[in-house]
Image (tube, rainbow, N blue to C red; front, side):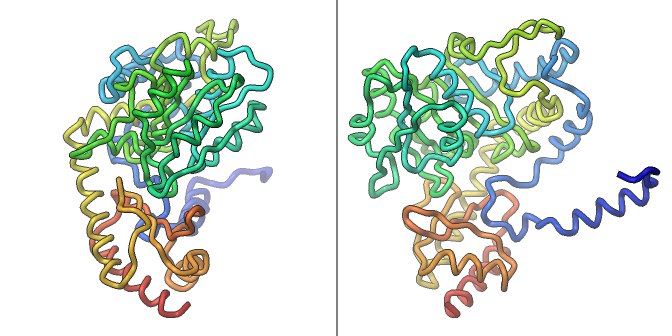
Length: 377
């Protein structure tokens, strides 16, 4: 830091230079985030100083957070749901597993997750000193139920199901996992960080939420298909008892108890999430998801015309393409054609996410460059 500060014009020039080095979303087909809705941005700025770590000082913002929980509870079939806004799926998953662990007295706790689970569960194993057992996935890239049951033992404190896997957008058989959880008296957490704002708005949706009696908690990210600002995640619990397992005393604040992982929490993302959910409503989200699925269908049809097929038929707006040498193809698309895509690992595939910032013209341009890149490798 310099002894004397720069004037505003100089600082803004530095910001513009930094911004020019950021990728714009119009050539990004790998991210599960997108441009936030305009009303979310306005709300974010309006509440930029609000700190939900001591929400007694910011009662209006806190009331909005409670309304978000209520709206999500109605959307996900639990009118008595409890929870709070997190920084995203990783924090939500950490806290859900922490609640599992704290509610059981075992020496070597473990959880059973699908092999397709997000890498945040590897972090969880390290942070919480808990063993994460990974169940096999089947030919449809869903968790294998026999594998899940075979991994359950006396030290198992909970199960995890995925509703919209990061690599393939697949949904595990949550209804069956719910039955297994109930039969074994286990906690069941659903990672719906991406799928949570997609599945409820599809014409035909699989059960994945609190409508299933075995589901204990759920992670959902408004900063993905919810079109809120980053970082906006939500952790929801069916029962207050499970939230209480996260309790910490905070005697020097205006509130005497916290259930959150972070101390300071952004009230700006609370306002952004509240604003966009109130503005769009179910109808607005239904239109956004419908458009994203139309784009997905168009993309799949377009790549099939050049001889490329998806690994599985897309469940939502995530497509994994069966291509030769996906890692090499990804590198070529990035370096030579300025497209950012990603790769799935098991099975190896080129991964595309069809977010709301995409359009049909961009898809045509990408598919044309994809064909050229394939011809060159």
